[in-house]
Length: 243
Image 1 (cartoon, rainbow, N blue to C red):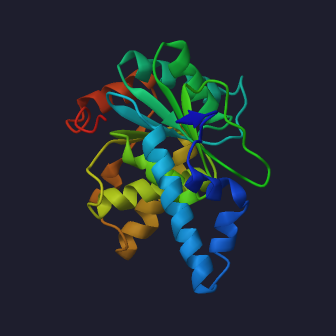
Image 2 (image 1 turned 90 degrees about the horizontal axis):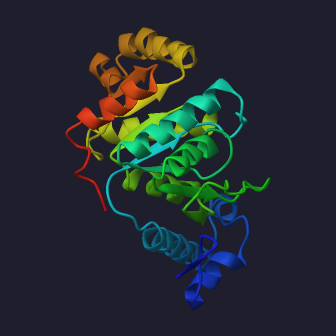
Image 3 (image 1 turned 90 degrees about the vertical axis):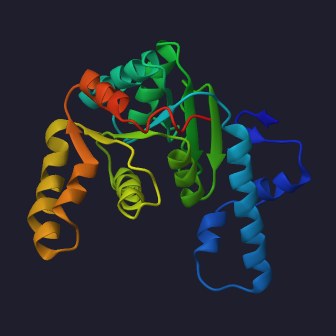
């Protein structure tokens, strides 16, 4: 069972609550074998908690974006309208569970009567789950969190964001490029925010041969919320990855 988004009722789960900064310790370098085994168990239990907590029906869309855009910012407003439009179209909306763009998308989904999900992350400056989540899970390890944000979704919408958003975007595109993930839609919203990145990809990576020009087709730049939702609906893959 879960309580406030955390798995309880299992002795094994106490391992997750017992150690803070578990990911920093894990990535600090080579350690004795016992510590590595303990980390492996903790990672497994964290993934298990995610699997058991994220139970819903139907198709899901993950929305990525910065935690730094507050209510009243145009990007926040767009994400809120996006969340509502996705919910009305029958999609559950999943985010990283925090403030900013994540809150806006969850808020829109909740206000439209849809399913609103979050995969939160523990940070030194605590990232509190936003108040518009029907269900959320809190993770210590970034990579476990990313697995959950990708695993359950049949499309991804990328709103303006920083290193974390870029990391999540390129992770999804790499998985699609290498055929580890089906060719689900990846929609970038935010207008000029993404133009310089696209110019860099087209003007540097393609000529250098590090990506193919066709790889850019994985990322669809869209201005309008309704257009984004229509694009996701048209994708034949959507509806085949419901839980």
